[in-house]
Image (cartoon, rainbow, N blue to C red; front, side, top):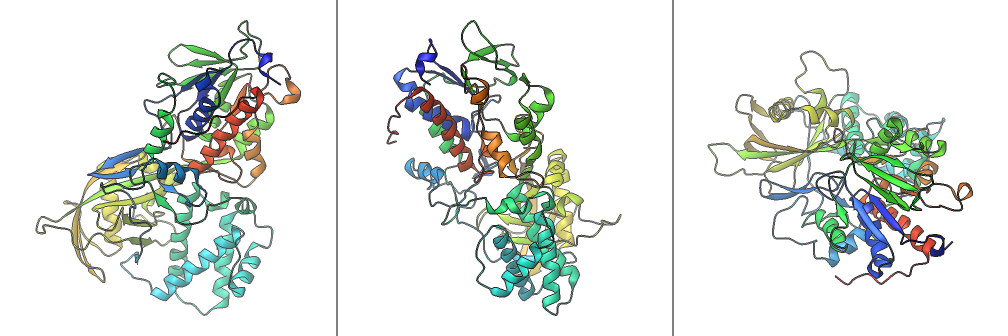
Length: 522
């Protein structure tokens, strides 16, 4: 196939100005756009670029409402870009600028502090089970034997595997306080929910965990903000290439056109664009709505709709709270601790003080060691509930939770006080900042996961362009698909989105035989 098949200059429309879309556009521009070989447009439904990357400030410190971590710097293209453009260092305080927090204080309902050896034992058990699920070798033979036994019996979901592992563990050692063990184990499960976006770990496919790949070396945040990587990619595109507030309402494909362009993209403002190729980079959540709502005309073929339907796509939200010192103190010393919260997992009673949406929140933690801004992560139903709450309801709920953990809380003033092993701490919850990915019509969630009933094959199907070669030799590559949910081994990550953008751009580069210019040094 070659460029002689198309008389006019190829026109490519990229839908979505997130990591995948901007990467694809950047790659295409360097290969052909800068030489005038194609007409390239990026359309974005919102008023900003970045997609699920959203850097902002909260009380003078840089925070991320969306993507936060570079998950392993060894081989990460995101790390390479951030390092090249000087975004890894900043004078402004930023979220997790000192890495992962250490020296956690673990408290359970009723103000009980679990035994340190019990905390460590449950943490080790959980870590070994998840390492086994991911295909990592276990150094401890007993731990490996337990994990193998937990995986037997046709278990398909991660949740059942983990709970079976906990049950088997109880049978190997003399332990008391099963209620506390359950609470501590559930604390780790709740953290896992935020890693995966699954509302229930029973939805996560156990076999698929072994296909997921991670980069080696440390995980870090970007001191100047994830947005700097996005801004850099966008800066390499020609002026006017990116058009904001162009929300797509329909994509018509696989048809004849007097212009020779088989795809037309229609927008909410009544305008439209014809194209030879459209790269769709919207989230899986939006694709699920699009399939149900008939956004594609004709509808996507059954294999594609099946993949969209079967894969999981969940909601993860972040809650930032400002903790001000009490009026009687001129500073908050010591700082708010890295607080891990263990909740009893039984049914909630009518007089229960911990709101249900806080019961699966594993921690409250300063965004760096000396910060007065603390962060909590929410997933699933709890994340969606968080989006509906007012700031006052959020603060009330957090303060009620602290009171059940042993803090002395003045509910009227939203203040708290506690004396414990981490010192005398007194403060007041003052301000709230939270994300809202679930209800945002441009995203409808946070990131994808392989759900029980699906597999990595669905990720491959998500990535397959339309029409299939055997169905159209004359007008191939009309619809191409990129985004984290289209990458079989790096889904749910920004680098997965990046790789998918390169992949789809390379399809067109190979199709037209364009030569790729070397990347700019800046």
